[in-house]
Length: 150
Image (cartoon, rainbow, N blue to C red; front, side, top):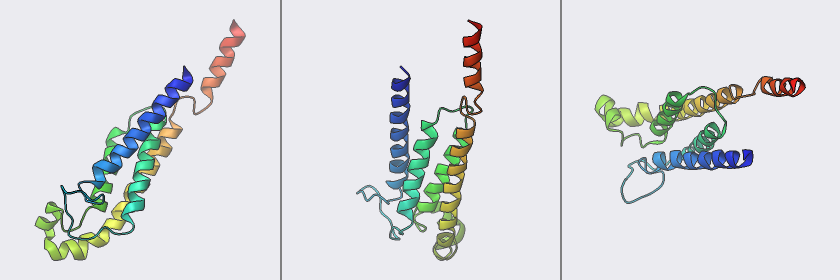
């Protein structure tokens, strides 16, 4: 039974990790589709950032969690989306600082956002790992003490 629960959790984690990558990569046109276009070519670092994001998202879902950090996870995923998106395709950026600002100010900030998003996701995985059930070993001592009683 435990193996089935672990297999289900790992399958769910893989699905959510892949889903996170696809949901970010298609609208930002990192994965080329006929539905979206991109004015600035995909930069080399966007692929490893998406890969790291997918792996960290899968790891977050794979860990049996104590506590919920879903909002923080969504924030990290949103940061990644802004980081890998085309700098001049973001309408909010264009309205705020124009095309030259998007290329001169926003584009150089995107790798920093990418690093921040991967760092945030990594921290969330570590935090979830530390808060998982039985992380402190207390679970094992409770089982042993219950065995001694019977």
